[in-house]
Length: 333
Image 1 (cartoon, helix red, strand yellow):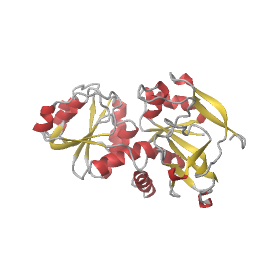
Image 2 (tube, rainbow, N blue to C red):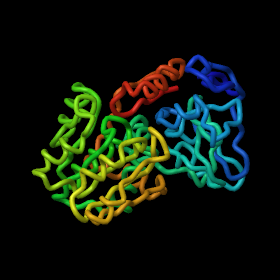
Image 3 (cartoon, helix red, strand yellow):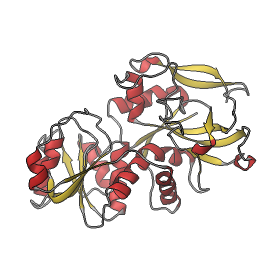
Image 4 (cartoon, helix red, strand yellow):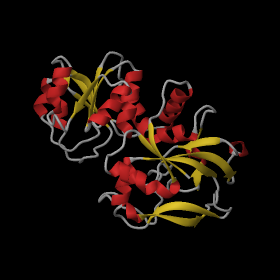
């Protein structure tokens, strides 16, 4: 811990490689009207932090910027207009600012010791949920919860294909699909990740490095019927193969495009297999509350693979950038 007026932060002053993420000392922010000062106990990293580091053409970043969108901690001070009942409460922050944008991307995030947050972003953590587990949930698990349940209406017995199954969103999709009673076909890039996915409950593993035409492997593994639901947040050149993997009347769910936004689709498969494409736009507070409840009741255990102190946060971003990670990276100030 720093003293009462200064805190350690990991900040970005220019786009580039992880050497741009530097440990600095900043003043502890004040809790302005409508805000609470939260002492950060855990911060989850996401692929978004890689985009912020490298810079995206359509997403200008105001510098300096503190990355980190998934934040859990304790309310230490409240500003005018905020109930003192919040003082001392354990909270996770809803990652979207009430004015729009996301923590760590459009405003400073959680790679620091304290943050002043709008009271509308405060979500109380149940007593039996740890800070680390809470900080694993909002962006990845919240996104997956909305995509699979609110938008995708997945049902027990359905065959579900997950592309990029070993990252934060992919792992959470696998856990939710198994929780719902689905048969899961998980695509990943290595034998080791495949083994971990099997341990988490995946029914079929497709290694798309060994089998670039993953649709053939899916078709065979599904008994030449195809899958009812495919989850594709990869984009790039994966869409036609995803379409080829679908059963008649199936649904393709998407919440992003980490490998490229412009994707070719084959319209023949759309009409011939009567495929629905369903977009899902991140999460709402209710999704995060639902995830916390799943953890509290023992139905869900977030997969946290790497825990790092604040000074080593850049290593966590590097792991995400190299896709050399399974599940979540959590930084603990």
